[in-house]
Image: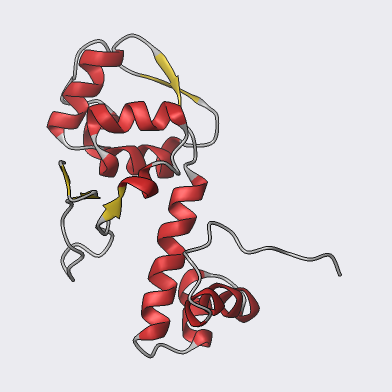
Length: 157
């Protein structure tokens, strides 16, 4: 993964690869916690997000000394990233963050893009398992021309 014109080049989302990460700016990477930013420099953004989705939340994850073929992490992240992870952190237990701010920002962008292309709010609510009011709050940022929100403000009832 390389930085080019302040965007990180990653694979494009295709029907064969629907969960691929869209191009992210350097400011987006800043949404990662500092420990995960350091990890991203070693193993790449895709591997960091895979770790966050599967192991995030504060539990410690033991990194093996050697990248064994049968280790569950090898199935989760690609070979080169797994080998780099073992080389740098082998024998250590890492606390993996959820990376909630970045994951939420990516989800909001996808929701806004789908809404802008004509998908109904009701369908988006079902797809993303959110209520229509939440979808409405997310897409209002698009109509107001706001920067992508990391989280909508909620008001007490």
